[in-house]
Length: 196
Image (cartoon, rainbow, N blue to C red):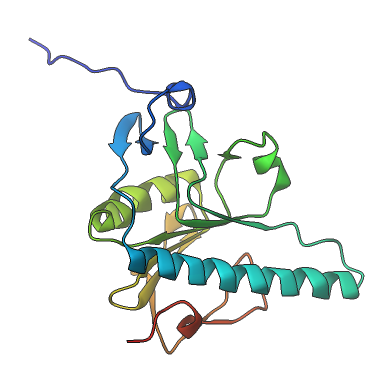
C-alpha cells in the first residue's frame, strides 16, 4: 500500500497566502521563518548593507564620470521575496540583482540574484549551509556568501559549470573580498564584523 502524499505548495500559493507569519517555500515545502533575528544578526546585516551600498554608489558615480553606461545592479535586504521557480520562494538576508528584468514586476525578484548572502543565526545555520546551498546552486546563483557573525568568517561559494566549487573559500576579519557583481571593488571584511 502506498504512503499518503501531501500536496506540494506552489509559488502562487505563497503569494496568495493570507498568513501573516514570515515563511519561505522551498521545493514546495513550507519553511517557517525563525523568530525575529537577534541583535548581532541585525547589526552585522546592517553593516553589510551600508558597506555594499556605499561601494555600489561609488561604482555608479565612477561609471557616470567615465561616460560608461549606468551601473545596473541594485542591493536589496530582507525581507524581500525571491522566486526561484514554481515551488521555491526564499528571503535571503542580503542580495544583489544586476538584471532589471528580474525586478520588473515590482513585487519580488524573479530568478537567481547575482549574489546572495545569508547571515547565520543559531536557528538557521543548518538550513543556510545545507538546504539553501542546494537551492541556490540549483537556481544558478553565481555567488553565495554565508557570513558567520560569531566566528567572524565568510564562506564564499562560486558557481562553475552549474556546481559550487568545494570546499568554499573561507575568509576572515583580516581579509578582503571582491564580489563578482562588484568587479574591481575590494571590501575589507573588518567593515562587516563588530569588534570584540
